[in-house]
Length: 201
Image (cartoon, rainbow, N blue to C red; front, top):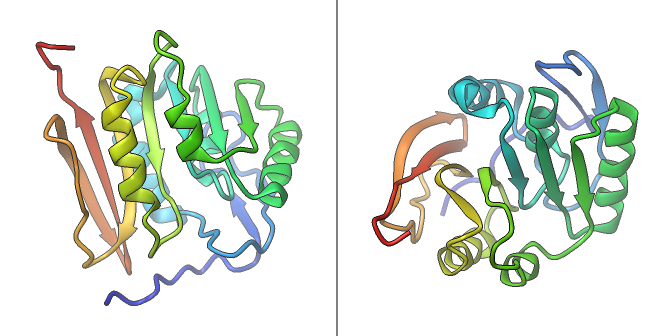
């Protein structure tokens, strides 16, 4: 069984690394399971996404602190939707979005899996998806399974970022998600997949 991931960001604050909000700090509440992506791994991820991000439509499924979704908005995403079930965390996200002046970002206090299942066919697809649910839960597998059933939610060559415990193999990943990059830092591994074109799409 993998060890519980460590994270040095225990103060309830994180820093936006780059973009229009570069260097700004935001606060997040002490909610169980909320584990912001560390600065180093986040910087690596967004270096990978440099060519993809400007003007992209992004979805942060389990937003938590907003480390990923707010960073994407700061760096030029045209729209970022952050889904967060916990009301306290969602309220903090809303406050941070307003404080940072990120007009392209909005938070929905909702169950991410239910939201995916209710996605309306024909809605504009997302270019970048962040999947970083609480570790040691079934949410990641459940979300991936739901995403395979909602094939129109992702753009043809969408990028999907997954964060998971290191040394803990990922479960089901669709055949048309091709591993693009991956990096392990401490007890956490980040995987970046690209959705491959399908002749049936």
